[in-house]
Length: 235
Image (cartoon, rainbow, N blue to C red; front, side, top):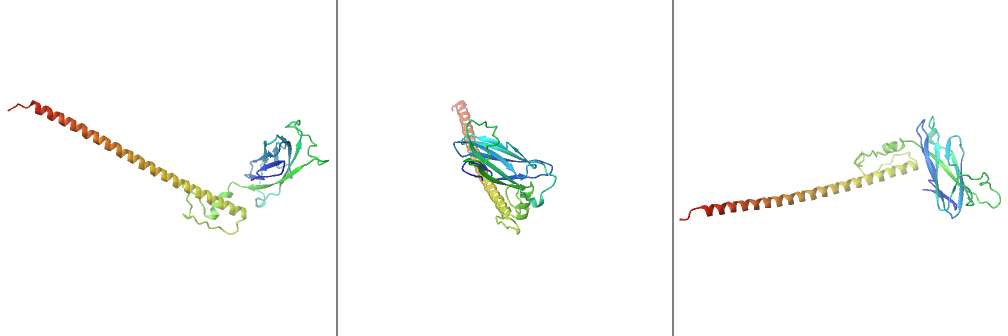
């Protein structure tokens, strides 16, 4: 899901970082030019010491896109309640085609005269690697290799005190489980069909081999009888 204005669109519309202590985390932003003009962009943040943005400025050619890599520097401790108040602002404006893609003038985003500056606000979301596993445990959806749940039932009992975001994640996990079950059943049906087809081919080969052997034996017996009858003395 993305957000945008008349000049550019941004995907995704929020920056999600999976936090692991003492390790940097990354998030890619795709900046899409929605116009037939050259559009310059600039990325700002309320916490410039925490994030490393490359490129933080650039020019996107008409109907083209550019990728911005945002790096959250390694954290020594988890934020309280995994909540983040940091914000990002992405500014964009039309520029002449002659402007170098990698060298945007410093005054390109000054709000003066008739210049139109679009601004998109992006929020930051923190998550952890074990978050989804904890949600599965809370909802009773422990997925196995065959796609079945620990309770052996398709009924989803939602625990109390879950946020809307957590409930959506649980439902998504159920959909993934159901899809895995369906694929597993389909594979089992295909295997059964293959086995039946193989057995039928084996039976047909056995029948042909048996008929050929019986025919050959009959020919040999007939040949021996003919020799015997022709060799016996006439009375």
